Image (cartoon, rainbow, N blue to C red; front, top):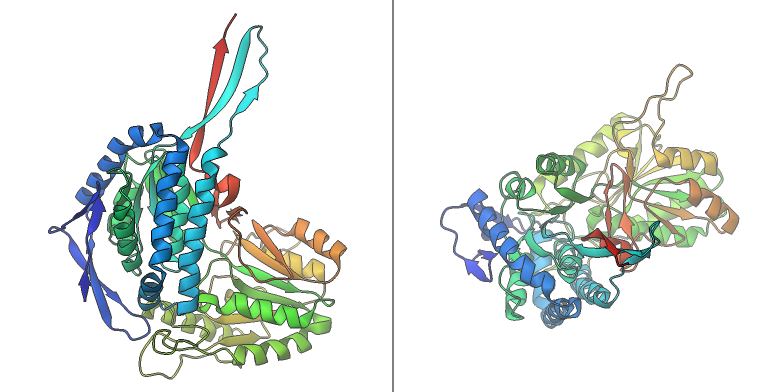
Length: 493
Protein backbone atom coordinates (compact mmCIF):
# COMPACT_ATOMS: atom_id res chain seq x y z
CA UNK A 1 0.00 0.00 0.00
CA UNK A 2 1.44 3.36 -1.05
CA UNK A 3 1.52 6.64 0.86
CA UNK A 4 1.60 9.92 -1.05
CA UNK A 5 2.51 13.54 -0.38
CA UNK A 6 1.55 17.01 -1.58
CA UNK A 7 3.61 18.75 -4.28
CA UNK A 8 4.29 22.38 -3.39
CA UNK A 9 6.84 24.89 -4.71
CA UNK A 10 8.71 22.34 -6.78
CA UNK A 11 9.08 19.62 -4.16
CA UNK A 12 7.18 16.77 -2.54
CA UNK A 13 6.19 17.86 0.95
CA UNK A 14 6.09 15.43 3.85
CA UNK A 15 2.78 16.13 5.59
CA UNK A 16 2.86 15.24 9.29
CA UNK A 17 -0.09 17.37 10.42
CA UNK A 18 -2.86 16.08 8.17
CA UNK A 19 -5.31 13.32 8.77
CA UNK A 20 -5.22 10.38 6.39
CA UNK A 21 -7.74 9.21 3.79
CA UNK A 22 -7.95 5.62 2.64
CA UNK A 23 -8.19 4.93 -1.10
CA UNK A 24 -10.00 1.78 -2.27
CA UNK A 25 -10.25 -0.28 -5.43
CA UNK A 26 -14.01 -0.28 -6.18
CA UNK A 27 -13.83 -3.60 -8.02
CA UNK A 28 -12.23 -5.52 -5.13
CA UNK A 29 -13.03 -3.19 -2.19
CA UNK A 30 -9.36 -3.54 -1.18
CA UNK A 31 -7.56 -0.55 0.34
CA UNK A 32 -4.74 0.36 -2.02
CA UNK A 33 -3.32 3.61 -0.60
CA UNK A 34 -3.50 6.41 1.91
CA UNK A 35 -3.33 10.12 1.14
CA UNK A 36 -3.11 13.23 3.33
CA UNK A 37 -6.21 15.30 4.05
CA UNK A 38 -4.54 18.66 3.58
CA UNK A 39 -5.56 21.38 6.06
CA UNK A 40 -5.75 25.13 5.44
CA UNK A 41 -2.04 25.54 6.25
CA UNK A 42 -1.08 23.27 3.35
CA UNK A 43 -3.41 25.14 1.00
CA UNK A 44 -1.88 28.44 2.14
CA UNK A 45 1.61 27.18 1.32
CA UNK A 46 0.55 26.01 -2.15
CA UNK A 47 -1.27 29.24 -2.99
CA UNK A 48 1.65 31.35 -1.69
CA UNK A 49 4.06 29.40 -3.89
CA UNK A 50 1.81 29.88 -6.92
CA UNK A 51 1.47 33.62 -6.27
CA UNK A 52 5.23 34.12 -5.95
CA UNK A 53 5.89 32.17 -9.16
CA UNK A 54 3.20 33.78 -11.30
CA UNK A 55 4.82 37.13 -12.28
CA UNK A 56 7.99 35.53 -13.64
CA UNK A 57 6.02 32.74 -15.33
CA UNK A 58 3.73 35.24 -17.08
CA UNK A 59 6.75 37.16 -18.39
CA UNK A 60 8.04 34.12 -20.27
CA UNK A 61 7.08 34.12 -23.95
CA UNK A 62 3.96 31.96 -24.38
CA UNK A 63 5.85 29.57 -26.65
CA UNK A 64 8.28 28.83 -23.81
CA UNK A 65 5.42 28.14 -21.43
CA UNK A 66 3.90 25.85 -24.04
CA UNK A 67 7.19 23.96 -24.30
CA UNK A 68 6.85 22.77 -20.72
CA UNK A 69 3.29 21.65 -21.36
CA UNK A 70 4.35 19.65 -24.43
CA UNK A 71 7.24 18.10 -22.48
CA UNK A 72 4.80 16.86 -19.84
CA UNK A 73 2.61 15.39 -22.60
CA UNK A 74 5.57 13.38 -23.89
CA UNK A 75 6.28 12.09 -20.38
CA UNK A 76 2.65 11.02 -20.12
CA UNK A 77 2.77 9.02 -23.35
CA UNK A 78 5.86 7.19 -22.12
CA UNK A 79 4.00 6.15 -18.93
CA UNK A 80 0.63 5.31 -20.45
CA UNK A 81 0.53 1.74 -19.13
CA UNK A 82 1.19 2.50 -15.47
CA UNK A 83 -1.10 5.54 -15.58
CA UNK A 84 -3.96 3.56 -17.14
CA UNK A 85 -3.61 0.73 -14.64
CA UNK A 86 -3.57 3.20 -11.75
CA UNK A 87 -6.74 4.91 -12.99
CA UNK A 88 -8.45 1.56 -13.46
CA UNK A 89 -7.56 0.36 -9.97
CA UNK A 90 -8.71 3.47 -8.13
CA UNK A 91 -11.73 4.41 -10.24
CA UNK A 92 -12.99 1.13 -11.74
CA UNK A 93 -12.69 2.24 -15.36
CA UNK A 94 -11.98 -0.45 -17.97
CA UNK A 95 -8.30 -0.36 -18.96
CA UNK A 96 -8.95 0.46 -22.63
CA UNK A 97 -10.95 3.53 -21.59
CA UNK A 98 -8.28 4.47 -19.05
CA UNK A 99 -5.64 4.29 -21.79
CA UNK A 100 -7.84 6.48 -23.95
CA UNK A 101 -8.13 8.95 -21.09
CA UNK A 102 -4.35 9.12 -20.66
CA UNK A 103 -3.55 9.47 -24.36
CA UNK A 104 -6.48 11.84 -24.84
CA UNK A 105 -5.13 14.06 -22.09
CA UNK A 106 -1.68 14.12 -23.71
CA UNK A 107 -3.31 15.12 -26.99
CA UNK A 108 -5.27 17.86 -25.25
CA UNK A 109 -2.05 19.18 -23.68
CA UNK A 110 -0.48 19.37 -27.15
CA UNK A 111 -3.55 21.09 -28.56
CA UNK A 112 -3.62 23.72 -25.84
CA UNK A 113 0.12 24.31 -26.24
CA UNK A 114 -0.57 25.34 -29.85
CA UNK A 115 -2.51 28.35 -28.56
CA UNK A 116 0.79 29.93 -27.51
CA UNK A 117 1.07 31.53 -30.96
CA UNK A 118 -2.64 32.23 -31.32
CA UNK A 119 -3.34 34.59 -28.42
CA UNK A 120 -5.13 37.50 -30.04
CA UNK A 121 -6.08 41.04 -29.08
CA UNK A 122 -8.12 43.71 -30.86
CA UNK A 123 -7.65 47.17 -32.31
CA UNK A 124 -10.71 49.31 -31.56
CA UNK A 125 -11.67 52.52 -33.36
CA UNK A 126 -11.46 55.63 -31.19
CA UNK A 127 -13.75 58.67 -31.12
CA UNK A 128 -10.76 60.92 -30.49
CA UNK A 129 -8.22 62.24 -32.94
CA UNK A 130 -4.75 60.82 -32.52
CA UNK A 131 -5.78 58.01 -30.22
CA UNK A 132 -5.38 54.24 -30.59
CA UNK A 133 -7.31 51.77 -28.48
CA UNK A 134 -6.28 48.18 -28.23
CA UNK A 135 -7.46 45.23 -26.20
CA UNK A 136 -4.89 42.90 -24.66
CA UNK A 137 -5.47 39.41 -23.29
CA UNK A 138 -3.53 38.84 -20.07
CA UNK A 139 -3.30 36.05 -17.48
CA UNK A 140 -5.82 35.99 -14.64
CA UNK A 141 -3.24 35.02 -11.99
CA UNK A 142 -3.50 31.93 -9.79
CA UNK A 143 -5.94 29.18 -10.73
CA UNK A 144 -7.41 26.52 -8.44
CA UNK A 145 -8.31 23.33 -10.31
CA UNK A 146 -10.67 21.09 -8.32
CA UNK A 147 -11.11 17.73 -10.02
CA UNK A 148 -13.82 15.03 -10.23
CA UNK A 149 -13.34 11.30 -9.82
CA UNK A 150 -14.88 10.07 -13.09
CA UNK A 151 -12.19 11.29 -15.52
CA UNK A 152 -9.56 12.35 -12.97
CA UNK A 153 -6.49 12.34 -15.18
CA UNK A 154 -7.99 14.00 -18.24
CA UNK A 155 -9.30 16.84 -16.11
CA UNK A 156 -5.80 17.65 -14.83
CA UNK A 157 -4.80 18.50 -18.39
CA UNK A 158 -8.06 20.23 -19.21
CA UNK A 159 -7.44 22.72 -16.40
CA UNK A 160 -3.65 22.87 -16.22
CA UNK A 161 -2.72 23.16 -19.91
CA UNK A 162 -4.73 26.29 -20.82
CA UNK A 163 -3.94 27.86 -17.46
CA UNK A 164 -0.18 27.49 -17.86
CA UNK A 165 -0.02 28.43 -21.54
CA UNK A 166 -2.05 31.57 -20.77
CA UNK A 167 0.51 32.60 -18.13
CA UNK A 168 -1.22 31.55 -14.93
CA UNK A 169 0.10 29.32 -12.17
CA UNK A 170 -2.09 26.61 -10.69
CA UNK A 171 -2.96 24.61 -7.58
CA UNK A 172 -4.65 21.27 -8.34
CA UNK A 173 -6.77 19.29 -5.89
CA UNK A 174 -7.66 15.77 -7.08
CA UNK A 175 -10.73 13.95 -5.83
CA UNK A 176 -10.10 11.97 -2.66
CA UNK A 177 -11.74 9.02 -4.43
CA UNK A 178 -9.17 8.96 -7.26
CA UNK A 179 -6.00 10.82 -6.25
CA UNK A 180 -3.25 8.36 -7.17
CA UNK A 181 -3.04 9.26 -10.85
CA UNK A 182 -2.51 12.90 -9.81
CA UNK A 183 0.49 11.97 -7.67
CA UNK A 184 1.97 10.21 -10.70
CA UNK A 185 1.28 13.32 -12.77
CA UNK A 186 3.13 15.43 -10.20
CA UNK A 187 6.18 13.18 -10.58
CA UNK A 188 6.12 13.67 -14.37
CA UNK A 189 5.68 17.43 -14.04
CA UNK A 190 8.61 17.52 -11.62
CA UNK A 191 10.81 15.68 -14.14
CA UNK A 192 10.44 18.36 -16.84
CA UNK A 193 11.84 21.06 -14.57
CA UNK A 194 8.89 23.43 -14.36
CA UNK A 195 9.87 26.56 -12.43
CA UNK A 196 9.07 26.20 -8.74
CA UNK A 197 5.54 27.13 -7.78
CA UNK A 198 4.07 27.07 -11.29
CA UNK A 199 2.30 23.76 -10.62
CA UNK A 200 1.26 22.69 -7.14
CA UNK A 201 -0.92 19.82 -5.95
CA UNK A 202 -2.65 19.34 -2.61
CA UNK A 203 -4.71 16.32 -1.66
CA UNK A 204 -7.65 16.07 0.67
CA UNK A 205 -11.40 16.01 1.05
CA UNK A 206 -13.67 18.51 -0.60
CA UNK A 207 -15.06 19.77 2.70
CA UNK A 208 -11.55 20.48 4.04
CA UNK A 209 -8.89 21.01 1.37
CA UNK A 210 -11.37 21.89 -1.36
CA UNK A 211 -13.21 24.40 0.83
CA UNK A 212 -9.95 26.08 1.88
CA UNK A 213 -8.87 26.35 -1.76
CA UNK A 214 -12.14 27.65 -3.22
CA UNK A 215 -12.48 30.30 -0.50
CA UNK A 216 -8.84 31.38 -0.52
CA UNK A 217 -8.24 35.11 -1.11
CA UNK A 218 -5.08 34.32 -3.08
CA UNK A 219 -6.99 32.45 -5.80
CA UNK A 220 -8.10 34.39 -8.89
CA UNK A 221 -10.11 31.67 -10.66
CA UNK A 222 -11.65 28.43 -9.38
CA UNK A 223 -12.16 25.85 -12.12
CA UNK A 224 -14.30 22.95 -10.89
CA UNK A 225 -15.88 19.88 -12.45
CA UNK A 226 -18.42 17.91 -10.43
CA UNK A 227 -21.91 17.91 -9.00
CA UNK A 228 -24.36 20.82 -8.80
CA UNK A 229 -24.45 20.92 -4.96
CA UNK A 230 -20.67 21.03 -4.75
CA UNK A 231 -20.55 23.66 -7.49
CA UNK A 232 -22.98 25.81 -5.52
CA UNK A 233 -20.84 25.43 -2.37
CA UNK A 234 -17.70 26.42 -4.31
CA UNK A 235 -19.45 29.43 -5.80
CA UNK A 236 -20.57 30.53 -2.34
CA UNK A 237 -17.04 30.16 -0.96
CA UNK A 238 -15.54 32.06 -3.90
CA UNK A 239 -18.14 34.84 -3.67
CA UNK A 240 -16.73 36.33 -0.47
CA UNK A 241 -13.55 37.21 -2.40
CA UNK A 242 -15.36 37.91 -5.68
CA UNK A 243 -13.25 35.13 -7.19
CA UNK A 244 -14.14 34.09 -10.72
CA UNK A 245 -15.52 30.57 -11.17
CA UNK A 246 -15.57 28.16 -14.09
CA UNK A 247 -18.02 25.36 -13.32
CA UNK A 248 -18.83 22.21 -15.29
CA UNK A 249 -21.62 20.60 -13.31
CA UNK A 250 -24.14 17.79 -13.74
CA UNK A 251 -26.08 16.69 -16.77
CA UNK A 252 -29.21 14.77 -17.64
CA UNK A 253 -28.62 14.35 -21.35
CA UNK A 254 -31.68 13.42 -23.39
CA UNK A 255 -31.37 11.11 -26.39
CA UNK A 256 -34.21 11.73 -28.85
CA UNK A 257 -35.05 8.96 -31.32
CA UNK A 258 -37.46 10.09 -34.05
CA UNK A 259 -39.51 7.78 -36.26
CA UNK A 260 -37.21 8.19 -39.28
CA UNK A 261 -34.03 7.38 -37.32
CA UNK A 262 -31.55 4.71 -38.32
CA UNK A 263 -32.41 2.43 -35.40
CA UNK A 264 -29.27 0.30 -35.67
CA UNK A 265 -27.13 3.41 -35.39
CA UNK A 266 -29.26 4.84 -32.56
CA UNK A 267 -29.08 1.63 -30.53
CA UNK A 268 -25.31 1.35 -30.83
CA UNK A 269 -24.63 5.03 -30.14
CA UNK A 270 -26.99 5.29 -27.16
CA UNK A 271 -25.62 2.06 -25.66
CA UNK A 272 -22.09 3.42 -25.99
CA UNK A 273 -23.18 6.71 -24.44
CA UNK A 274 -24.99 4.98 -21.58
CA UNK A 275 -22.45 2.41 -20.38
CA UNK A 276 -19.20 4.29 -20.94
CA UNK A 277 -17.44 4.46 -17.57
CA UNK A 278 -20.42 2.55 -16.12
CA UNK A 279 -22.68 5.50 -16.85
CA UNK A 280 -20.61 7.83 -14.67
CA UNK A 281 -20.15 10.59 -17.23
CA UNK A 282 -21.80 13.99 -17.07
CA UNK A 283 -22.43 14.16 -20.82
CA UNK A 284 -23.60 10.59 -21.47
CA UNK A 285 -27.20 9.76 -22.46
CA UNK A 286 -29.23 9.71 -19.23
CA UNK A 287 -32.80 9.48 -20.57
CA UNK A 288 -34.32 8.36 -23.85
CA UNK A 289 -37.34 9.84 -25.64
CA UNK A 290 -38.63 7.66 -28.52
CA UNK A 291 -41.32 8.60 -30.99
CA UNK A 292 -44.29 6.25 -30.59
CA UNK A 293 -44.19 4.80 -34.14
CA UNK A 294 -40.79 3.17 -33.51
CA UNK A 295 -40.86 2.81 -29.72
CA UNK A 296 -41.47 -0.94 -29.58
CA UNK A 297 -38.90 -1.78 -32.24
CA UNK A 298 -36.26 0.50 -30.73
CA UNK A 299 -36.87 -0.83 -27.22
CA UNK A 300 -36.61 -4.47 -28.30
CA UNK A 301 -33.30 -3.82 -30.09
CA UNK A 302 -31.96 -1.68 -27.28
CA UNK A 303 -32.74 -4.22 -24.56
CA UNK A 304 -30.97 -6.96 -26.56
CA UNK A 305 -27.92 -4.73 -27.05
CA UNK A 306 -27.75 -3.72 -23.38
CA UNK A 307 -28.10 -7.38 -22.39
CA UNK A 308 -24.86 -8.07 -24.27
CA UNK A 309 -22.91 -5.55 -22.16
CA UNK A 310 -20.41 -7.35 -19.93
CA UNK A 311 -19.11 -6.14 -16.59
CA UNK A 312 -16.60 -7.09 -13.92
CA UNK A 313 -13.20 -6.25 -12.44
CA UNK A 314 -11.39 -4.43 -15.27
CA UNK A 315 -7.95 -5.55 -14.11
CA UNK A 316 -8.81 -9.21 -13.60
CA UNK A 317 -11.24 -9.33 -16.55
CA UNK A 318 -9.73 -7.00 -19.17
CA UNK A 319 -12.31 -7.67 -21.91
CA UNK A 320 -15.37 -6.47 -19.97
CA UNK A 321 -17.36 -3.49 -21.29
CA UNK A 322 -17.69 -1.75 -17.93
CA UNK A 323 -16.41 -1.90 -14.39
CA UNK A 324 -17.95 -1.13 -10.99
CA UNK A 325 -19.47 2.05 -9.70
CA UNK A 326 -16.94 4.20 -7.88
CA UNK A 327 -18.07 3.46 -4.30
CA UNK A 328 -20.79 1.98 -2.11
CA UNK A 329 -22.63 5.29 -1.83
CA UNK A 330 -22.99 5.50 -5.60
CA UNK A 331 -24.22 1.91 -5.73
CA UNK A 332 -26.80 2.60 -3.02
CA UNK A 333 -27.96 5.73 -4.87
CA UNK A 334 -28.48 3.92 -8.18
CA UNK A 335 -30.27 1.02 -6.50
CA UNK A 336 -32.60 3.39 -4.63
CA UNK A 337 -33.43 5.40 -7.76
CA UNK A 338 -34.39 2.27 -9.70
CA UNK A 339 -36.56 1.06 -6.83
CA UNK A 340 -38.37 4.40 -6.67
CA UNK A 341 -38.88 4.27 -10.44
CA UNK A 342 -40.52 0.84 -10.02
CA UNK A 343 -42.79 2.22 -7.34
CA UNK A 344 -43.71 5.13 -9.62
CA UNK A 345 -44.83 2.73 -12.36
CA UNK A 346 -41.76 2.00 -14.49
CA UNK A 347 -41.13 -1.56 -15.66
CA UNK A 348 -37.75 -3.27 -15.56
CA UNK A 349 -37.06 -4.64 -19.04
CA UNK A 350 -33.48 -5.62 -18.15
CA UNK A 351 -31.35 -5.76 -15.01
CA UNK A 352 -32.65 -3.61 -12.21
CA UNK A 353 -30.47 -4.91 -9.38
CA UNK A 354 -27.00 -5.20 -7.90
CA UNK A 355 -24.80 -7.73 -9.60
CA UNK A 356 -24.40 -11.03 -7.80
CA UNK A 357 -20.65 -11.02 -7.26
CA UNK A 358 -18.43 -11.70 -4.28
CA UNK A 359 -17.11 -8.16 -4.11
CA UNK A 360 -17.14 -4.82 -5.86
CA UNK A 361 -19.74 -2.10 -6.40
CA UNK A 362 -21.33 -3.59 -9.52
CA UNK A 363 -24.80 -2.85 -10.89
CA UNK A 364 -26.35 -4.70 -13.80
CA UNK A 365 -26.95 -2.95 -17.14
CA UNK A 366 -30.55 -1.80 -16.75
CA UNK A 367 -33.36 -0.67 -19.04
CA UNK A 368 -36.57 0.82 -17.65
CA UNK A 369 -39.70 1.16 -19.80
CA UNK A 370 -43.04 2.79 -19.19
CA UNK A 371 -41.34 5.87 -17.80
CA UNK A 372 -43.05 9.24 -17.85
CA UNK A 373 -41.22 12.56 -18.08
CA UNK A 374 -42.22 13.60 -14.57
CA UNK A 375 -40.57 10.60 -12.87
CA UNK A 376 -37.48 11.21 -10.76
CA UNK A 377 -35.52 8.72 -12.89
CA UNK A 378 -36.13 10.99 -15.91
CA UNK A 379 -35.29 14.19 -14.08
CA UNK A 380 -32.40 13.60 -11.69
CA UNK A 381 -28.91 12.49 -12.63
CA UNK A 382 -28.45 8.73 -12.26
CA UNK A 383 -24.68 8.31 -12.83
CA UNK A 384 -24.99 4.57 -13.34
CA UNK A 385 -25.72 2.04 -16.13
CA UNK A 386 -29.48 2.65 -16.11
CA UNK A 387 -31.42 3.75 -19.20
CA UNK A 388 -35.02 4.97 -18.69
CA UNK A 389 -37.21 5.17 -21.81
CA UNK A 390 -40.25 7.40 -22.31
CA UNK A 391 -42.52 7.34 -25.37
CA UNK A 392 -43.40 10.68 -26.99
CA UNK A 393 -45.92 11.54 -29.69
CA UNK A 394 -43.69 13.68 -31.91
CA UNK A 395 -40.56 15.83 -32.09
CA UNK A 396 -42.30 18.74 -30.40
CA UNK A 397 -43.11 16.58 -27.37
CA UNK A 398 -39.53 15.31 -27.27
CA UNK A 399 -38.06 18.82 -27.29
CA UNK A 400 -40.50 20.00 -24.64
CA UNK A 401 -39.61 17.22 -22.22
CA UNK A 402 -35.90 17.27 -23.10
CA UNK A 403 -35.66 20.93 -22.16
CA UNK A 404 -37.18 19.98 -18.82
CA UNK A 405 -38.53 23.40 -17.91
CA UNK A 406 -42.31 23.33 -17.69
CA UNK A 407 -43.48 20.12 -16.06
CA UNK A 408 -46.67 20.79 -14.13
CA UNK A 409 -47.84 23.52 -16.49
CA UNK A 410 -51.42 24.53 -15.69
CA UNK A 411 -53.75 27.23 -16.91
CA UNK A 412 -53.36 29.07 -13.61
CA UNK A 413 -49.58 29.20 -13.30
CA UNK A 414 -46.32 27.88 -14.63
CA UNK A 415 -44.39 25.58 -12.33
CA UNK A 416 -40.68 25.56 -13.10
CA UNK A 417 -38.73 22.45 -12.19
CA UNK A 418 -36.25 22.80 -9.36
CA UNK A 419 -34.88 19.31 -9.92
CA UNK A 420 -32.89 19.06 -13.07
CA UNK A 421 -32.78 22.25 -15.10
CA UNK A 422 -29.67 20.75 -16.69
CA UNK A 423 -28.38 21.91 -20.05
CA UNK A 424 -25.06 20.20 -20.75
CA UNK A 425 -25.47 17.76 -23.65
CA UNK A 426 -28.20 16.21 -25.79
CA UNK A 427 -28.41 13.89 -28.78
CA UNK A 428 -30.80 13.43 -31.68
CA UNK A 429 -31.37 10.57 -34.13
CA UNK A 430 -33.10 11.38 -37.44
CA UNK A 431 -32.31 11.08 -41.14
CA UNK A 432 -34.17 14.30 -41.99
CA UNK A 433 -31.69 17.19 -42.12
CA UNK A 434 -34.38 19.86 -41.97
CA UNK A 435 -35.89 18.24 -38.88
CA UNK A 436 -32.46 17.88 -37.29
CA UNK A 437 -31.72 21.58 -37.72
CA UNK A 438 -35.16 22.63 -36.51
CA UNK A 439 -34.98 20.48 -33.37
CA UNK A 440 -31.38 21.46 -32.63
CA UNK A 441 -32.23 25.16 -32.59
CA UNK A 442 -34.85 24.52 -29.90
CA UNK A 443 -32.76 22.28 -27.62
CA UNK A 444 -31.47 24.24 -24.64
CA UNK A 445 -28.12 22.48 -24.26
CA UNK A 446 -24.50 23.50 -24.65
CA UNK A 447 -23.83 20.54 -26.95
CA UNK A 448 -26.01 18.47 -29.29
CA UNK A 449 -24.83 15.29 -31.01
CA UNK A 450 -26.70 14.22 -34.13
CA UNK A 451 -26.56 10.56 -35.21
CA UNK A 452 -23.50 9.79 -33.07
CA UNK A 453 -22.44 8.96 -29.53
CA UNK A 454 -21.92 11.72 -26.97
CA UNK A 455 -18.34 12.96 -26.78
CA UNK A 456 -16.65 16.30 -27.37
CA UNK A 457 -13.58 17.38 -29.39
CA UNK A 458 -10.51 19.33 -28.27
CA UNK A 459 -11.38 22.19 -30.62
CA UNK A 460 -15.02 22.42 -29.60
CA UNK A 461 -16.40 24.21 -26.56
CA UNK A 462 -17.66 21.96 -23.78
CA UNK A 463 -20.04 24.23 -21.89
CA UNK A 464 -23.33 23.78 -20.11
CA UNK A 465 -26.38 25.97 -19.75
CA UNK A 466 -28.73 26.49 -16.82
CA UNK A 467 -27.63 24.41 -13.80
CA UNK A 468 -25.00 22.55 -15.81
CA UNK A 469 -22.43 25.23 -15.21
CA UNK A 470 -20.80 28.57 -15.87
CA UNK A 471 -18.17 28.97 -18.56
CA UNK A 472 -16.67 26.03 -20.40
CA UNK A 473 -13.60 24.18 -21.60
CA UNK A 474 -11.74 23.30 -24.82
CA UNK A 475 -11.11 25.19 -28.02
CA UNK A 476 -10.52 28.91 -28.36
CA UNK A 477 -13.32 29.83 -26.01
CA UNK A 478 -12.12 27.39 -23.35
CA UNK A 479 -8.57 28.72 -23.59
CA UNK A 480 -9.71 32.32 -23.15
CA UNK A 481 -11.56 31.33 -19.96
CA UNK A 482 -8.08 31.49 -18.39
CA UNK A 483 -7.34 35.05 -19.54
CA UNK A 484 -8.86 38.46 -18.92
CA UNK A 485 -8.85 41.63 -20.99
CA UNK A 486 -6.96 44.85 -20.58
CA UNK A 487 -8.06 47.86 -22.63
CA UNK A 488 -5.24 50.31 -23.43
CA UNK A 489 -5.83 53.89 -24.65
CA UNK A 490 -2.84 55.63 -26.28
CA UNK A 491 -3.03 59.34 -27.06
CA UNK A 492 -0.23 59.95 -29.53
CA UNK A 493 -0.88 63.33 -31.05
